[in-house]
Length: 212
Image 1 (cartoon, rainbow, N blue to C red):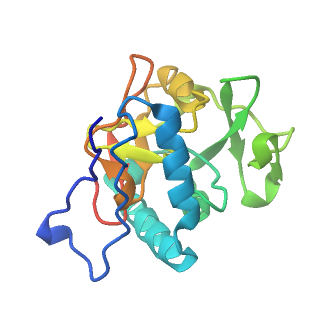
Image 2: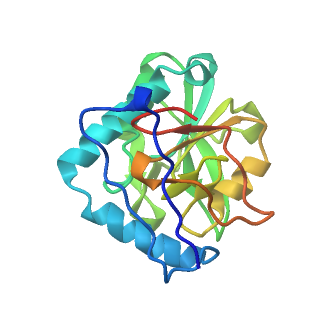
């Protein structure tokens, strides 16, 4: 088994405080996604709240300052849980700019659809305890979406995500020509992740230190 090492930042991207860097144990197999998920879920839970909040703000700011966000008229973005990279500020800014904002609703196993929201106040706790649009929300066809903002437990520099194992985002991405972006903590940006032919690549990765 090999170590999977985080990508090294260039000196120009350095900040005063380096983010946590998590090394994968030698006993962990490179191709074992379930093991990797357990490892990163544990590390994510152990991250200090203040450190996470600062990183989340920087990641959001990088996305909001990007050309892909500025040009997108219709944005599909996940609604973050407390442990995920916070997207509530991204959603509020997109709504404030008058963009067409849609968020996911998970249906049967592996199926996810996009529904329009006009306010975060319209969200209700749904499947898996995640905030989702209420029953009156209008479905947005995948082909009308310009930008997808996807969650990630980890990413590699080629643009592949390590998700939660349900395949919801991979199945959804196949159905739309939208630009794909993933939000990832710098310490969970790896050289290479295991991948299959089913895994969909993201063209943009946003961390608190850089944009890939």
